[in-house]
Length: 113
Image (cartoon, rainbow, N blue to C red; front, side):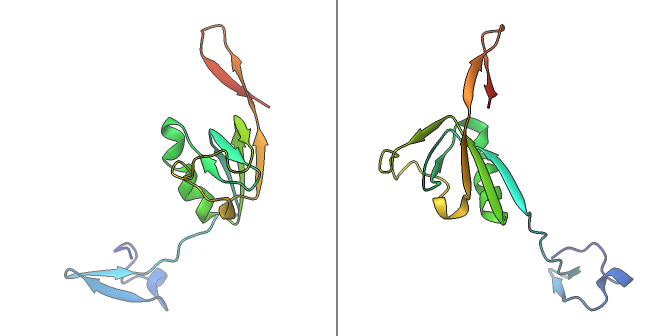
């Protein structure tokens, strides 16, 4: 629900509510067709674990999109991932692609396919 658009032509035919004394219009979320996400580890069923900031939006986008493709640095055998560390269950992931880490001149790492 958003107060934006209430009382305008954009709100015509849409559900409206008064919330805390302010009028709001219901807007349906826009689903994504494809989510491209980066994870640390995965297995062939699509279960994923994340590292650092990749955990911020990756799991949410995997659940929101119709199709999810995940890049991972390690593909583990089934049962090797600790169930307590799996953040995204495989039911939300359609494809896993393994990418390598490549050392840069600055001493850091970057991904390469």
